[in-house]
Amino acid sequence: DTAVSQTPKYLVTQMGNDKSIKCEQNLGHDTMYWYKQDSKKFLKIMFSYNNKELIINETVPNRFSPKSPDKAHLNLHINSLELGDSAVYFCASSPAYGQGYFGPGTRLLVL
Amino acid sequence: AQSVSQHNHHVILSEAASLELGCNYSYGGTVNLFWYVQYPGQHLQLLLKYFSGDPLVKGIKGFEAEFIKSKFSFNLRKPSVQWSDTAEYFCAVTPQNSGYALNFGKGTSLLVTP
Image (cartoon, rainbow over all chains, first blue to last red; front, side, top):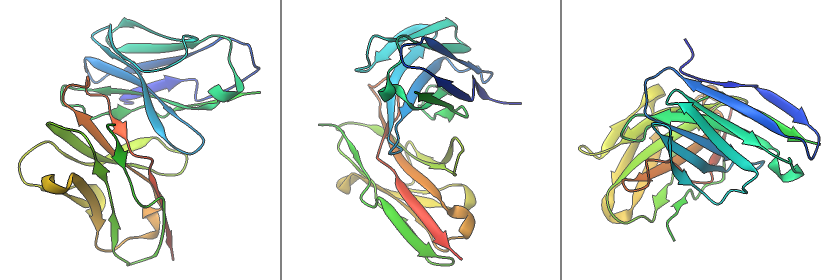
């Protein structure tokens, strides 16, 4: 059983397109996150949701919009994709003490 | 500014060599500390964590880390590395007022040669 799953695993698209990445966790955690890993492998928090409520929103372009329909799901929608959005996006969930359980990542390539 | 620093960006070791990767953080107050590993093409896996108690923490695959509060450090060690330890290693910190999001260091790329 996959604890944190993401779809799609790979996403190749043209500049200007809109795309979504889906994330689901079956661990019963209240908190979910989106992290971005750039080409230099640096990981940075983008968003954090606790029980469907946004609690962290780092300096991320407003082209990125997270949506949490329920506490087991946290989707990421990206409008007007740019070349610089190419990265690996990781979804994660955690219990109260912050140990993150990470999904397999979505490798986004914007052409 | 709050930050997590990993001093070694690239480390190359021969099999059976000992490993120590440095991690320092600059957060005030109580923090939780983690080391994650990312094998090539894979997602992050937790190696070990420190919340409180014994500052010497043992993790999976023979890794351990020592929390030294006075030095704001949480260095990762392994007495004898294997080729299969080749991976990226990330130190991470969660200050308790941060919503528990992980703040990562820039990572250390470890290459173990046969």
